[in-house]
Amino acid sequence: MPEPEPISPPSPLPAEPSDDIDAVWSRFLTLAAAQRTIAGLVARTHCVALGGGHAKIQTGDLAPAILNPFKDKIEDLMSRAVGARTSVEFIAPEHPDQPAAEEADVSERSAHPIDDAANDPLVQAVLEVFGGEILDVREKPRPTGEDEANA
Image 1 (cartoon, one colour):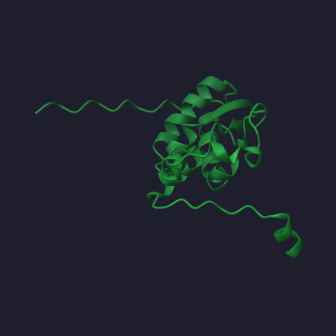
Image 2: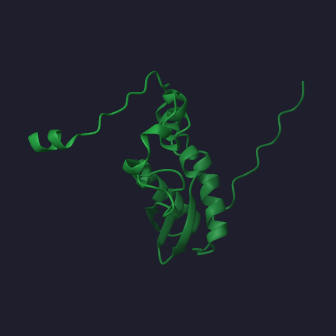
Image 3: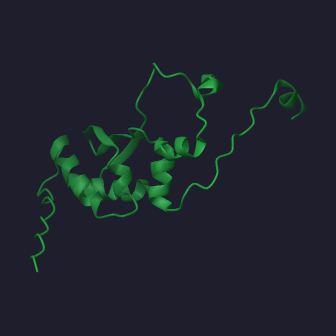
C-alpha cells in the first residue's frame, strides 16, 4: 500500500504585521483553503490594496454581495494573515465595455437556459456554498410601461 503524501504545513503567520500584499494574500488563501464555506469563493478573488489596517478585495466574477455574509470570517482570516486587525472591503471589477443586463439583446439568449445558468459564476458560487442542483430556469417577465403605471 503506497504511503500517503505528507500535507505541507500552512504558511507561517507573521511575527509582526505585514503590508506585503503578495505574502499576505498567499497566507490568506492558505488559511481560507481550510474553510469549506468560503474556500471556493475567495479563490476567485484577489487583493488589490493593503495597508493601514484595511484590505480591498476585488471580487472577480462574483458580485460583492455574495461575499458579504462571510465578511466577518474573511476579516478574521485576513487579520491573521496580516498579523494585525484588518478590515476588508469588497469591490467589483469594472467592465465598461460590457452592456448592462437590461440592454442585452433577447435574441442572444440560448436555447439551453439550464446550461447557461450552470455556467453563470454567481450560480456556480451559490451551488458551491449551498449545494443542490438546477432543476428549472424561468425567465422573469420584464415590466411593461402599462404594468409600471398600475403599480
